[in-house]
Length: 53
Length: 208
Image 1 (cartoon, rainbow over the protein chains, first blue to last red):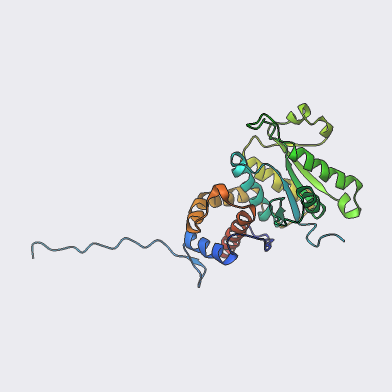
Image 2: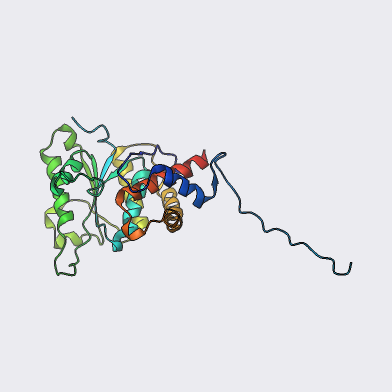
């Protein structure tokens, strides 16, 4: 993993840093509060209908 | 007085067209991953400076510079592009005639195939150019190894780590552009830098 100290700099951009940060969080599926990656939700189990009942 | 970021600034002198896009992304990504700061003529947005003055200013405040002189093809009007060899010349001039800081300058010269430059820029004879074969992996390793050797910094990650991270970035780039309603063809250099910065920060925060 890249551990280097990142050189960030404020430049004139058409998008803001906050927008980019939020977009990456969305794309990478990151929950900002805990900085963890949320696993994709498992498909819900279909309700099995007992047709013989 | 030298720019406070002088020892971290890397001036990027390369093509900025669509054919070169992945290579440009690899260059910027690697410079950031090695804890340096990429700058180019496209970074500045000062209409008061003419282009040459802008380039001279950026070269002056950059200790390091990456020059890709591989673009020798004629454009659709039948002319070659001389900007990159010209800007490389300014960099070498600054190193030769500048003050103590300027004399510390260090350059990486890329070409597509080794020693091709001898056919069109023979004044560079004796300079150890690096051939990249238009391969981003080779570009990443070339920049990483050059920065590691020339700066002697111990925090620079290995090239395989950077390549792996870059591939993840490239695979996610279309998605983030879609989220932000941006198009790759018109993405400004500064916005590309911001997107890469935030990607690396996010990935790093997850690893800590």
